[in-house]
Image (tube, rainbow over the protein chains, first blue to last red):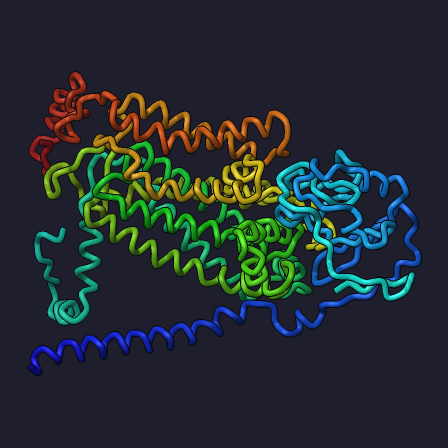
Length: 170
Length: 428
């Protein structure tokens, strides 16, 4: 009787030991992995206020937010009309211009190409808006990708108008 | 020669060797039988070892002066170049050493492809070699980020963004790699830490690579198995050591030509501009040794697709020993494979050239053609010709191709007669 039970008991003990050991190792590894995620000081810098009173129509200012450039463009009437008139069926990542710019005059977006992270150049490319020099993605006056390898439109960060001259990003 | 038991001469040496068989190891390494027909393409293993050690020593010294911080990194490189005694020399050796390392590794890899060194029973040597190559690319990439110039920054941005192509978890992976929301100080710090670690991992893999080599022994230009401990092999020391040294000296001359006369020709002038996260340089180009893969990345008109194909271009090589079904190793006896080898080499060089060009028009078209051919070569042509190619007859022994040359025996006999009476050994 005992001869049959013993191996089973031993197997159970081995399995239990491996399991506890595995959990122990995993919980010891987690801090080593997680330390690489953004730390508290990086997270703390997550909002920026920008004064936009000096931006003329047709001009873009670039500010740094979380280490990334943010394009703030005061669009001209022509640009707004162009952006609004595009048929959504022609878009790779369909989005209405009105969803991207709360106030159509102001386009606020992360100036990072959604392909591999370069900064697109302004007033360039086939749509006279943004063009990424790295791998040739073209964006329109609403920052939507129209051509090239980028999969998505330029990202719109979380922002709000604090007053008519100030934008708070983040 | 593991066949005969080695016993050190002195009592002290015997005492040590029975406790830690270092002398046995050293005896094995010096007397290791190598095929007598190895040509100069076989000297790149030694050259690569030299490159690794050079990089480790110069890197160790550079680390004494470099500061891994976004505010000081760029300055500290200039400090090394201008103020540190011989800093310019050490840094130029390290920077050009990386290029030389890749030059040698590419020759080493293509030698393997030509002579079929990856085939049974040497698959494990081949796979470990590829792991070394992958680690080399990672190490070189992280090292290139450390000077914190424009190319450092934007190269790091583009390469780390490759991981954002992974569906669902991509964003979190890049944030984790960066330690923030963009390439910044935490990124620089961890790259420095890993750039210091990886060469030692490479060193460990090199030990395994050589260990795995010493089990079956070297392949050779004829590609047939040699009979160990026969007149087909010669001891590694002094024969191969001397041959390796001659090749190494020639290699060092080329290496130092770059260091002293063209230290920046393989780099990019934009990297002498400090990193600026607001401005991307007009043409981002990786270091020359990554260009073929960069061309593949850009040839595919989809982000995820490009990344998948780029990684696949490396990983397909892991399966090479099983994709190439031909029993004959050396391309010398494979008329069709030999042609394909040269076409593949041309394709890879062409992709390298295209990787440095803007991705438009004819360049883009040729990149796509080259990418397609690269995969067709490995996935379709190799398995097919392995089955249908009519190979040339193989010699019985590695000596045959030499001895079959007309008049060669008479020439040897004549030479031997000159030394008659002297103890110069015998041939055959």
